[in-house]
Image 1 (cartoon, one colour):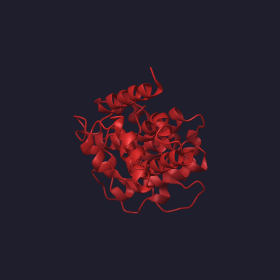
Image 2 (cartoon, helix red, strand yellow):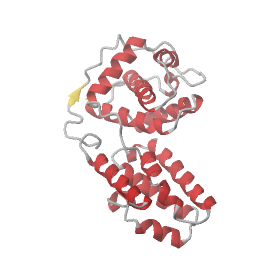
Image 3 (cartoon, helix red, strand yellow):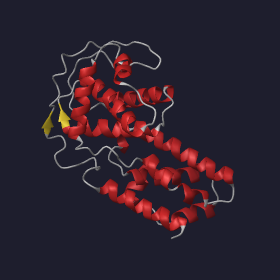
Image 4 (spheres, helix red, strand yellow):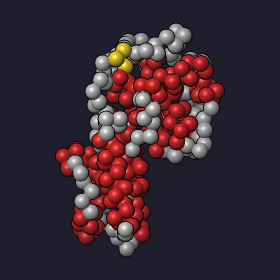
Length: 263
């Protein structure tokens, strides 16, 4: 089997995984359960503060209104905070994609979350994603420190168990960055110019990281996001038509309608 055939086979496996009920966002049963971990020892006070890395409370407004779904601006702040913490700790940035996967699906299953619980879910999702997917770890004690005393260690551990139970132990999602990394051998073969292929990968990676913060992409296939980002990179960098044609010739676009939305 050639390297190109192997990449295509791995890509097909990712398409199959993202299509399974375990990893699709709009699963039957989502939004039908109530929050089972609400008793976290009382609602902690919220106030802006500054830390390095930033504490989780600093990204939240001071209102106490209960909401049914995480508002887009709150989710964007969660994502930005996660990237800041990850960069501070020198951890792979794709961990943020996994963090938001946990966060989005947990919130989709549970209703009546207020901003304090959103904070706890976000912080615990990051802790869990780092714990599973990074050789560098962030301890529970460090996460509690980031909360500036708003949460206790037992609350984080209890929420960790709730997230794992809610996701039924499906904790290894196919992320768009993973999909892009899978295509790397094909991307390297698109052109003889190493600078061009390097820039294509970096630009596509940048677009993928932006998509993580935008809730428009929650329901999109990771393969479509990755492929759409790569297509957009070829256009933005004015790659030769031969490069674009070679990319399309691999027939990687399994959901053209979704890819058009992502690109």
